[in-house]
Image (cartoon, rainbow, N blue to C red; front, side, top):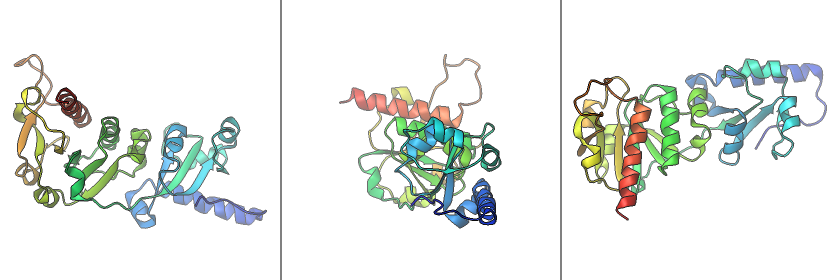
Length: 266
């Protein structure tokens, strides 16, 4: 239930309430406080409006200017001065609206992989990469992502902002990745520099696609469980190029290729 103020509180009460709320919102920049409170924040008009109804909102805050310019939003936020929004925001350019939401409880069910493609992220550390990967998954209809416990927290403000609302439609599961993969009865595809050319390989419409760490690739413990090693070849073959693709770019190319072959095989 969204919090709101009822009645006419005293100025002292309002100042204390405002200060405590500002401290809470700002503290959610840190993973420790997100875990302690079970809360995360969503910033900006698009992200907030795209996720309304998807998460349990504890607080909804907006500047008077935002409230005035969005009369048809259907939202009833607490008014917050622009200077206070600046102090609470994680963005370079403070937004007009912030929602504070409950982190949902999710459990991974192995049956999710039976007829679907699922991504597995092995120690993805960059918030921007994770946010973009979530957007890619959303675009290509992947609804579940398995994350190693050392993958960056998906509820951090930089990740949430980078998803542009896709965080509401894709479920992320943090778990023991090697143990989980070893228990699955499906194909496990892994992206490597020395794998088979993805464009020449038959690809299935179900299974797990492993994306490795930005610097070190797929860890040995996860690589040993991969049943199909794939690579995205550079062009032209043999030409001098960069060392590798960015993790989010590699994910987009990989998933797009899987979906293209799935479409061609219909």
